[in-house]
Amino acid sequence: MPNYIFGNISGVNEGDSFVNREALRNAEIHLAPVAGIDGNPRVGATSIVLNGGYVDDLDLGDEIIYTGHGGNDANTNTQISDQSWDATGNKALLVSEMHGLPVRVTRGHKHKSPFSPSSGYEYGGLYSVVEHFQDRGVNGFLICRYRLIKQSPLSPKKIDIKKQLPKGNEEIKRTPTTILKIVRDTILSQSIKQHYDYTCQVCKIRISVREIGYAEAAHIKPLGLPHNGSDTPENIICLCPNHHVMFDKGIFTIADDFKLIGLNGSLIVKDGHNIDLKNLAYHRDNIFNQ
Amino acid sequence: MPNYIFGNISGVNEGDSFVNREALRNAEIHLAPVAGIDGNPRVGATSIVLNGGYVDDLDLGDEIIYTGHGGNDANTNTQISDQSWDATGNKALLVSEMHGLPVRVTRGHKHKSPFSPSSGYEYGGLYSVVEHFQDRGVNGFLICRYRLIKQSPLSPKKIDIKKQLPKGNEEIKRTPTTILKIVRDTILSQSIKQHYDYTCQVCKIRISVREIGYAEAAHIKPLGLPHNGSDTPENIICLCPNHHVMFDKGIFTIADDFKLIGLNGSLIVKDGHNIDLKNLAYHRDNIFNQ
Image (cartoon, rainbow over all chains, first blue to last red):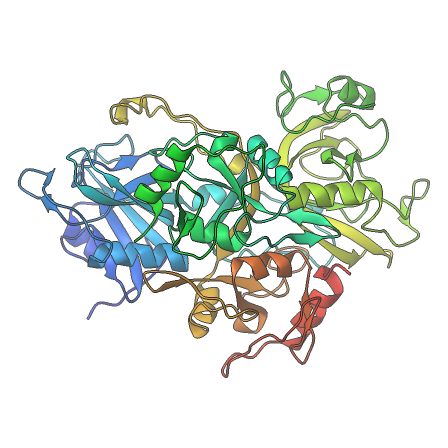
C-alpha cells in the first residue's frame, strides 16, 4: 500500500531532473507508475505529472490549467468521451482543492510548454488547486479542469532582516503554508460592493467592524484564462465569504430570473445593477457542479 | 478639497525618488503635507509614509507592521497616551482593510529599515492592509497596528507565453487587483479541520462539493510577527469563511468557558481538541475590536 506524502520531499529541490517515471517514483515525487494524478478520493492528490497527455492543458509557469483524466484515447491522444468528477484522480484533485492540500507538479519533455525539460522529467515545486470547472475540450467532450497556482511566488523574499528587528524578535519563523484561497478585489468590484453597502446578495448578512462593511465581489464568469470573464458590473455580484466560496466552487448557481439553483431563495438585485445573463449561463454550464 | 486617487499614479514607478514631502505631494503619491496617513474614514486611506515617527513600526520589505497615529509626542518621538481606532487616519486604514483598497507606501530616510532611501523619500509600491490589531507599544500605551502586504510579489511573473497559447487565446489580459484576503493552510490546520469534519465550530455549517467538506483553520493567536502564534492544535479552530473573517477582524472573540463574546452562543469543542486558554486571552486583548 503506498504511503501518501504531501508537500516537499526531503532531498528533492525544485528544478531537479529525473530520467524517467521510475526515477520519479524512487524519489517519492510521484508514486503512480503511469497515471498523471497520484492519490485517491480519500486522502486527496499528492502530485501530478504533465507530459502532453491532454491537448487542453495550459501552462503559464506559475499558473496551470490542468485537465483531469478519463475519456482520452492514449493511442491517438484524442478525447473520445466525457470525463467525470467522480473518477479517482479527478475526485482526488477536488479533495486537494477543498481541503487546501499542496500538490507536487512535475513536467515531462512531451509536455508542450516553455517550462518543460528537453528530456526526462523535471520537478516543478508545490502548487495549490484553487479552482475547478468543466469545459468542452477541443474535441467537443466534457472535461474536468483545475487551476493550479504555484505556492512559492507567494512566499516572502528571503532577506537579511535580523539587524532591524526589535528586541525579542531576533528570529523570524515562517510556518510552511498552502494557499487555500486568495480573494482579490478590483476597482470595479469596489463599486458593486458599495452599491450593495457590503451586504450579501444571497443572505443579506452584512459583516462589519465599527460599521465598516466587509463583503467580497464574485465574478460570475471568472477572470483569467480560459474563462476570460470581464471585470465589469454586469459580471460582478456582492457576496459574503460563505456564499462567495459556495458560488466559486459551484455549490449553487443562478437562473435567468435570479432564482438560486442549489440553494433556496433568489439573488437580491438592486436598481442600477444590470447583470449580463450570458455570464449567468456560463456559470451554470461551466462552474455549477451538479 | 483633495482628490483621492487609489492605486498607481500614472508616470510614477516603484523606486522613484522624491527630495521632500512637497515633491511627493506634487507627484500625487501622498497629498497630506505632514500626516503619515492620507485619506479619511469616508473613502479609506490612499497612502502612507513611513519616516521613523513610530518606534514600533516593523518593515520586512514585502510586509510591514505599521503603527497608526495619535498619542505620540513629536518632540521626543515617544508614545505618551493611548491611540484610538476612531482617529481619522486609523479609521481610514481600517476602511482600506475592510474594503480591500490598495495603499501606496513611501519610505523616508528617517525610517529605520534596509528598504529606506539614504535621503529624501522613495515610493515603495502598492500594499494591501490585511490585518489590524491592538498592542502595547514599547512605551506601554495602546497602539493601533496594521499588517500591510505588498501586492506585486503576488502578481504572476511576466513571461513570453504567447507562443504556447491555444488558438483564440493570443493575448493574456490581467486585471489589476488588490489582495483582499489570503487564506493559508498548514499541515496542522489540516488535522483540526479533519477532526471537526470541516464543520464550523461556531455555526455548525458544513460547506461541501460532492460531500468533500470545505472549512478554514483560524489561528487564535495569529502566526507571524509580532504575534508569533504557534502552528499547533492548541492554537487552531475550524471555522466557516464568514466566522473566520469575523474572528480575524475581531468582530467576536471567545471566553475561557468557550462562550462567544460579540456573538451569541458557544464555541463547539470536541473531545481530543485542547485549546490553550492563553491564546484565547491573547485574542481577546489584541484582536477583539471592542
